[in-house]
Image (cartoon, rainbow, N blue to C red; front, top):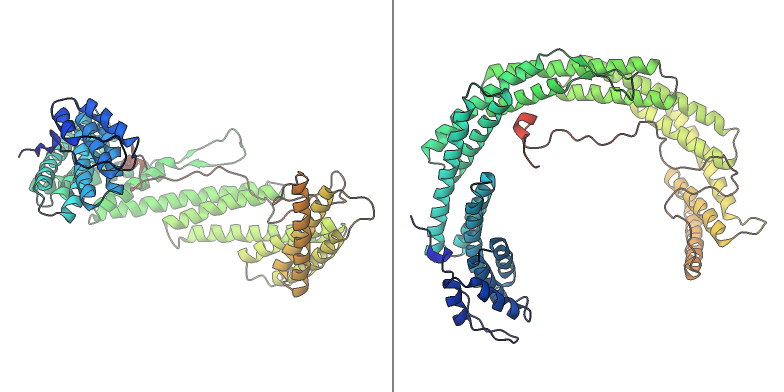
Length: 517
């Protein structure tokens, strides 16, 4: 089958320019056909300077760039022509995009086979779009069949190469898995292109089976390895096990089960590996509980227990309703609730001896601790009364604090100090309104907001900076060393960088290796 000659002599779209200079398309076509496409491209570029969005000129520019071998540049021009042109120009541009993608893929074949495959797939997509609009277009049908057959041949040849390489006894396990995966993927793509192709269908089935068995074998090996201690030089007191090999083994068995769900042996091995991983996570969680008992500081206790709870919940993700994991999680929740309640009691007692600013902060933290304890252990009868009492005390403290900050001091006060004072009042009123909404609190909040808006406008007119709005501000009157009123829960867990899990379509690194997700 011959490829349509439009690849070698692509016609320009004759069209008069709205703006000068005029361009004679009939003179440019012989330049393109005669190997002087660069000359034609220069003339079209000159015309586009006066009419840069002319779809016909953009299409002609794509033709000239294509003929000059500037394929990426041609794609850009065809894209713009397709977007801004009428239906006919758009169809022509899509057709030429299919041609260009094919040529780019052909040029990359010796150096990057995956890029060639991706380009030829895109070429077919462009042809299909043209055929939706013009199903009888002969040139498009010819080129579509040509590229489709070349892509199919390429996929089958590459799949066969990888399938044969996978049988080499000198291969490492990783290399064998890589070859089997590539063979399976190429056969699968070939089947998608031609579902009736027997070579593609049988190759896909055979490579699927071989890949599943190889993954299961390596997954069983990794999942059966003894757990090794893992030491963190930055936290030597933090005990842990290296579960990475076990996790990869589970991932491989999950992928094997996905490829061959009818194999009972693989399913059985996967179940056993998941239980072993769940056991390992429960062991690690119990070690965190042991560490918590030796930790004297409240924040560290909370952080350690929360890390243990994450492991218990991870075990339950592997094996739902797993009793050891449920028992460990429940015990950790009980300890967390106890610590939160004790810390809430401490903050409540401290609030009784503090000034109004510090009292508000301590009561806010106490309330947060009691609420977290109640979420962890909702059946504790003593917690709801503590929550209610703390809410009432905090509401009174916030109301007093807001009234105090709304009053101007007896001494001199700069505009900056006045803004900071009213921002503190606004902050207190907002928290009070969220805690116990009332019409009176809303009226106070509106009054403070109006005053703040006027002061900020005056400060802006004078070129002053009215403070860092939106951030917690010191309460006026607090001396050095005193605390700042903060909103939200206390920081009781270690800050940790986000560590994403395995990315990609599959569960194991072996199946996702080399992928750019």
